[in-house]
Amino acid sequence: MADLYRLDGRTAIVTGGGGGLGLGIARALGERGAGVLVCDMNERLLDEARQSLCGAGVRAAACLCDVTNEQDIAQALQTAERELGLADILINNAGITRMQDIMEVRESDWDAILAVNVKGLFSFSQQFARRLAGAGRAGHIVNIASNGAKTTYDDQVHYCASKAAVVNMTQCMASSLARYRVNVNAVCPGAVETEMLKGCMAATEQQTGGRVTVEDCMKTWGPPQLGRLIQPEEVGRIVAFLCTEAGAMIRGQALNVDAGNTKF
Image (tube, rainbow, N blue to C red; front, side, top):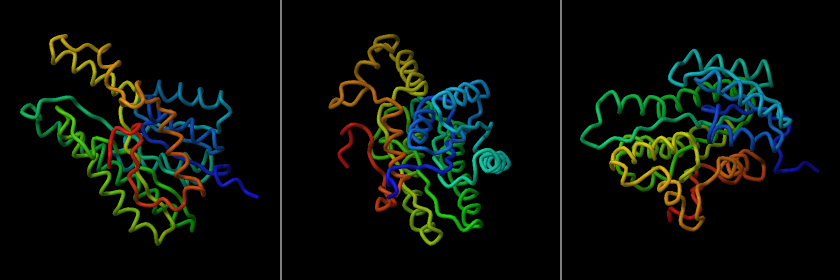
């Protein structure tokens, strides 16, 4: 009898997979048997990620990719198929943020965040779904949103808006792609220990003139029920579950993965 929790024979693409949350997700997918293509814009991180995954026994490949570039997306899909087999799992993890007072947000800041977090996610999903449908294959998409989609973070109005859009897009995509046998969900992580989060901590230290330090943030930004920051692999294992047959009845949902910090 097949193990409904395994992903053997599957191929996953993880955008923003060179480090942080993306690499944690890639490791979790690999734990369940999937081959993984990590995509990122940082060549050094990509090489390190690929070596780390292969060293752990994961079938892994890497590809430079800017998710705002349609040609890069097409190249990533082709690379996955050539190196690992047709991709039937897409994890839209690539994302950016900026800590800025609402009065200081410029049009270019807004456009940059929406281009990656919203438009890039849609473009990759569309090309992925077209390729799957053309091959007559079913698949999964998991979009990485944020609990910032459901609550508010000071000085991140553009980021929170982009992640709220991801949640709504997930629901639209789940309904629209069901006829093509593509199951779509999102996860909404909380404070995950990544370089992006540490960048926000450094910005907080600067904005407060050192009254709140990075060390203070490390101790206090984690979910109270957990008492520490969330680790990338802890989110990754929820993402991987959503791509298994065991998770097939979860569709069009935005699951909070923040240790109880968000109540809805």
